[in-house]
Length: 230
Image (cartoon, rainbow, N blue to C red; front, side, top):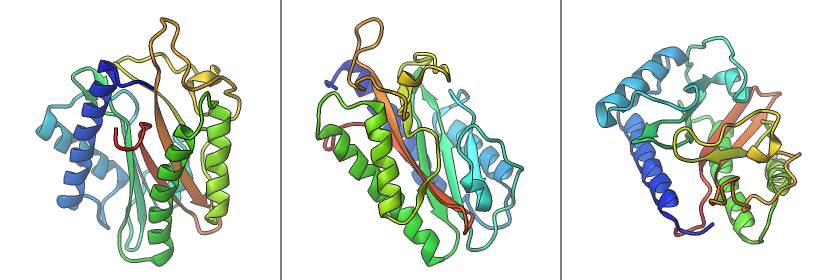
């Protein structure tokens, strides 16, 4: 992927999303006793106050406890965050018509297994990023299977049917569920570096979702797939 004006805009959008998530941590919005819906509302209000954001290109996700097992498409029942809980956020804010997609995991308390999961998903993201940029013409299927292998290596299970998707100027290329080439998906056999229908570069979000179904915990880490030091 070349450094284009589009990529610069996407990077700027992600920087703002990162600032938003930093502020979520500073204000300690994620804590025991709050519902997922309440946290979602508070993050929305914070984003509006910081950046004037009202539009999100996908549904805003806050998941706690056993709800962290569920991938994006599910809509589990609203939960209250408990002491020593694990929580993840997945937000797709739009900054000046440019999309971001950012996901992070938080541990309320000091449970060592949950802290390990939080650490492992971030490590896995950067390993998968390095793997992607280590070879040319890599397919979505190759990258997806690599992410699954990382989960197994680290003692987890990969939790979702995809490991990422396209991102761009709002609204970006419509992500039809049946078109697997829009996703980092086991049936995407086309090079991820191939251009779109108009010949422009395509850009990707890489997402890592590891779970332990027996312990009913999951973690999520998501951001723009760009070469290190870009």
